[in-house]
Amino acid sequence: MTSEFEMKEPVRIQQEDFSQDEEIRALQASSKRMGGIATFLGCARDFSEGREVSEISFDAYGSMALSELKKLRSDAIEKYALLDARIVHRIGTVKGGENIVFIAAGAEHRVAALEACRWMIDELKQRVPIWKKEITPQGESWVTPHP
Amino acid sequence: MIKVLFFGPVAARIGNNALQVEYCPGIRLQDVRDELAVQYPHAFEIVCFAAANGEHVRDMSMRLADNSEVAFMAKFSGG
Image (cartoon, each protein chain N blue to C red):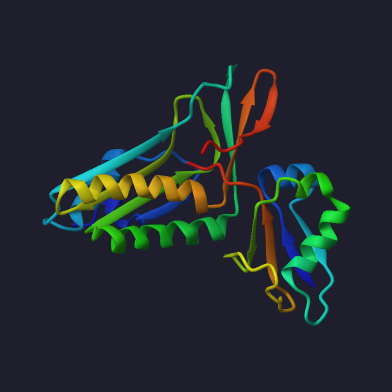
């Protein structure tokens, strides 16, 4: 039987929202040896730097961002001996409270899964060419990254 | 020609997503940056990273081929 989630690529950049359940099911389907799955969900905050934020708009160097995300996944699989990993990042416009990014790492044991998940989101912020702009009632501003 | 791409905050400061720079044999990534930084100093104040043909480049002395695609980028803020 082939279901929709099994056909989705493990690394994607997309405008539409994603389903965490589908991503986790797809990850689990890749191996029955998986004893631990760690996930990170990044969401759009409706308040930043003392201002209300109504929407966040993303710009990306699409082809490079996708290729960097694919490298990031394969680097994490190698570095932490993961059984599988998935990364989905949204672009376009995201409203306060909505999902932005989802990362899942599956390993035989919890420590590798947890460490790999943390490593992937930290690395994503360092090396993947995506930029966010906060849209507030007072105007728009590009986000200066936090360390 | 060399195609130069801009995104996010750099594109906003330049007022454009792409420009072209004339190719000449031996041209380096640093030469392209220097030429554009004179024209768009406000935008290049926030440039932290460069890419050539979709790959990060740290060595700005890298020589470019004709029809290369390069990008000068601000710090990333995805995730």
